[in-house]
Image 1 (tube, rainbow, N blue to C red):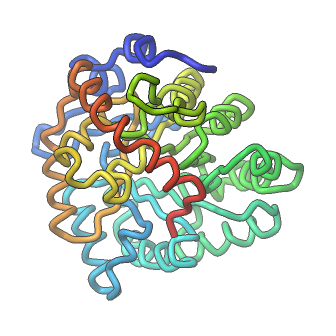
Image 2 (cartoon, one colour):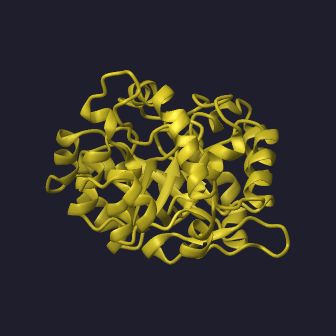
Image 3 (cartoon, one colour):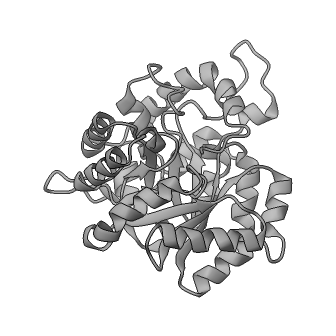
Length: 327
């Protein structure tokens, strides 16, 4: 399950040929956002997604939140990421108010997440999400924030959340099932190996790359692993749609490298798209402009960026996301 970073970079063809060529990106001829196919789902989505988590909830007034959503979709974003846990349904409710008019017309792919592990509770949450989102079918429902081995056992237990989501998929209330993880690449890799998820969402940025010794510090085994080298290869082998998150580490990397380099690093990985929380109209505009101009970073530049950021920030970010649920 472990693979060296050098081998991974080579076998997944990073650099100038990678992200767009290998993963089927289409560059819009009218200045719109590039798109990629979301793995086995076959859906084509913008490579930048609107995040509906804590940064979206920073729009305190509802009219401002709805304005932000409409602006994101006007600018060509076609993937919406939300969750019941974002404000105990507030994010979903606001998303539903906008998407009831725009989803079909603009081809918006709608993803939400469920934190409950108990099957009955998960079913009630999905039914509530359908109402809040004002739809009879959600494109993708993730099992939210896989934590550790015990959590995976709960998820897998008969009648619990995974069984219920697969039943909802069979009943066409949801189209695809996925799983997210912020903190444990090894347990996510096990989950992906054991189950045929349609998609997975994981923390992927230049500062979270698995560290090596030689930086004048003791590095435990956990600090040497990363989603990029442990979980991502499993998802790719099984042709899952891969969604990158924590691009800016929730401002943890702000000022540590140019914003476009942080975004481009994640988009230069073999992923379908990146979810970004955008708490202001200016931030939406900035991220859209950067995404329109996106070109995959050369392998050497990716290595240089991660080699600079990971030794300084990976340990702190691993601790920060150890028990993280973006609510």
